[in-house]
Length: 243
Image (cartoon, rainbow, N blue to C red; front, side, top):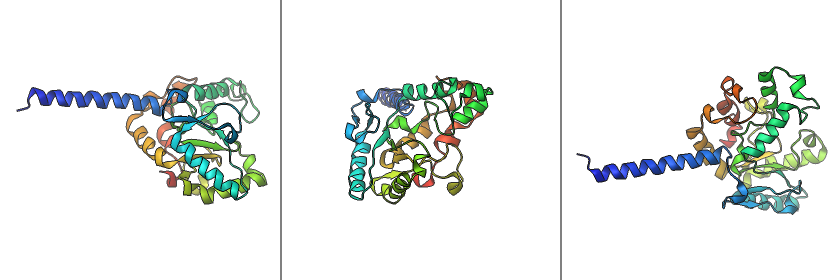
C-alpha cells in the first residue's frame, strides 16, 4: 500500500523535475540574458574582434584562452568574432535577413526570393532560426571571421589548418564541417564555428530530450517550421566527431 508520505515525496520529485525541465528549456532556446547568468563571463576585449561586449560560459572561455596562447606561440592569432547569442540577438539577425534589411549574397531576399519557404531555406544555409542555435548555450565561438572568403585567404587557410590539428586538444570541435566529407544535411560548412564539447555534448543531449518543433517560434516565418525537420536536419546534423 502506498502511503501518503510516499505520495508526497513522489509529488515533490515530479515538481522539481518539471521546474528543472522548464529552466533547461529556457536556457537551451536562449531565452535568457548571459550578462546576468553567473555561469557566464565577459570576453576580454583583447580577445575580441568586434569590440562590443560578448559572453561565454566560463569553461568555454578558459579553454579558448589556453588555445589562443598556444596558437600565438605557433605564430597563429586567434580572436573571437562571435560568442553567445541569445534568442533576442538571433531573432534580430534572422528577421533582418527575412525582411531584406540585411543583404544575403548581396541581395534583398524579400524581393529576390518572394516564395517564403524558399527564403526560409536560403537563410538557413548559414543562419539559424532563434531557438535552435548552438550559440545560445555559451559553448560556441566563431573564430577570426564568420565569412567563407576569409578562409580562402592564405591567413585563413593557416588558421583553419592549425585549428583542425590542435583545437580538439583543448576540447573544441567544428560542428558544421564539409557536407561532402560527412554526408550531413543542414547548415553549410562553417570553418569559423567551434564548439566546446565538454559542455556542448550534455546540452545537446538535453536539447534532444526536451525541445520539440512546437517550441521553435517567435520570429518571422515561424509558420514554416513544421515544413522542415529543423531539429534533426540542422541542429543535430553535425560533424560525427562532435556528437
